[in-house]
Figure 1 (cartoon, rainbow over the protein chains, first blue to last red):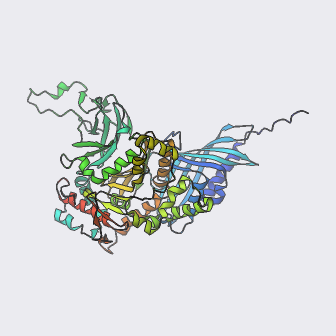
Figure 2: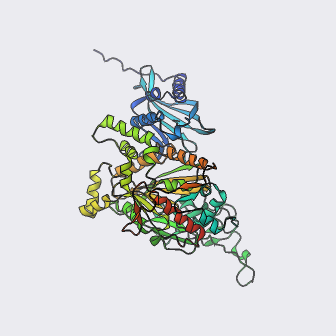
Figure 3: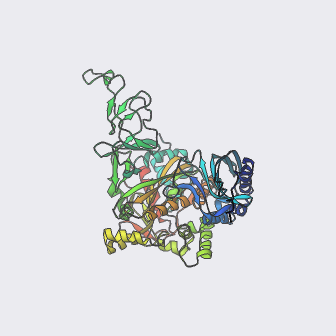
Length: 168
Length: 442
């Protein structure tokens, strides 16, 4: 009997990837935290380095480096009644652009997507503007994807920044 | 010239309260830069940041740009970052290596000890001692005083005053304990820096470090959540480091009372000692082995048993020996302060220790951390609350006269006492109204 031909994945269309990233951004802006967290794989990580070109999240400080547990704590904190810095609550707008497919593994369907982000965080009469490059490492999940790793490299990551309360 | 007389300044600090202007008046802030930050020892950097000749690090002392540099003879120098010619900053990168320091404007070149090597077009144009013309000093100027304790470099803008080590007093043991936690007795700055901007006066942060009353309230949202989640997911088993780091911030009032606070000359203080929010971290057996091999079991136990929480070296520096981090206070304006957080590797210790320090700083000290935003917010609210005419005075009454002398030459009190604040303002008053910090002792 001949072996069945190995299943291969076609490179995802940019439009599909864009829609995935737009949807993620929308979940963040609408503060649908649980739905957002569900976009990640169980071992999925979220990383905002503190230095440009930072190679390592474990031996160098980061603005954020979170696994599922830390995401769960942060998300739970968002609805805690006694968090002074969340009263009044912050809001955000994420704008995603320049989406490009960097690599694609036809065997697993995993891919790496690069995009640019502008995020505005507003709270109590002041708004901060963050801009950066995002890298999403995605794995196949049926017709869609899950995030195995998301990295947001802020253009001013070394700057003396005030509170960043919401996910970038 | 200040419009405040020394007497007016002195009257703004009473034994049990301080005037709100100390946090809100730009003129008082300028006086603080001159009289406190211009007289005390101010933290500059750590010698491990400049191991090789020519290695340099740029920072500020009392808002003035300075350079910490390793000279070719192995000594370090703390120089004003100002060309002797037109005043341009000569080094602009945060750190690097320079065989010579060259000004980017007219190309004057300096040796790594600040002495002038070359003036573009020749030094002769600036006259010589025989000509009778006044000659400029062609060298980069050093800060009046610089000294290092266990590699931690401090400098002073004042030419006289106490030496660094006696000035550190009982807080020196906190530096010792941090370095002694390395099996080789040495620390190395590693893992970068977190720079966190606050829209509030520098003193709120410096006071908050040993404010044992706030953690269980201000940090409830993260710490209580972590505590509950830890209990839910891991029960009485060993929880991951993130849970171990966050949960103790929600310890009860009793725990913080028991930690205790200790105040010393020149406004210094520390909290904890036997216990702290860091003392229940799970043991790393490989690390204990390395320590015992280096020091023997008894000395190792002694080193581990010292568990100070925050040590404050007033006004610019705070250290956590048990977690190998420091935070550096950089005032910008009366209502603006940058707090820098640095991590250290314990030489000869397993990697896990550094990873724990890094995790700690990410979770507690980064601009996007889980604990600091609530401190940041509370400072912001005080900064604005103090604009009201509701009361000109801020209370420091709690457990007034209830502290007792300790065997380190300072005084100790129950955790929730305001003693540390009273002690900081005693130093504040002495610096602001005395000469060169005379009288900042008890």
